[in-house]
Image 1 (tube, one colour):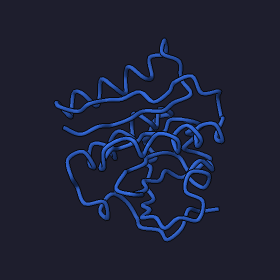
Image 2 (cartoon, rainbow, N blue to C red; image 1 turned 180 degrees about the vertical axis):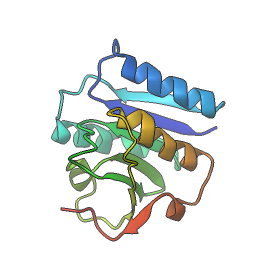
Image 3 (cartoon, rainbow, N blue to C red; image 1 turned 90 degrees about the vertical axis):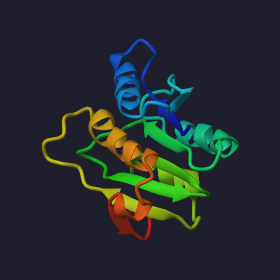
Length: 150
């Protein structure tokens, strides 16, 4: 069984969270989804980084962490990062720089199709999580880059 965590700025009454969980469970039958937090203030990158940095290491290795805070596909590229045998998926809006500082990381930049809707978490983040869940090699997820873009 694999674990996928979700951290978002959505509220529990939004359909976004239910849609993400529905798609994940439809594709990954035995996945365990853990909600880290869904009451983060909108666009609160510093708070998001603090929350994830404080708890991710308590999860088993190979846990997949989806970060759904300030995920604007027009403004930010999508990254998948492998760090300490955990996987992190989200928009490069500054949260990864705060999470990892100058740590050595494996980073993949994820191409976002032009046909993607404004619900990038459902269209792109979940696809990446499913590939990782199905044990696709991390190096084949996207385009390798050396550093988090500035």
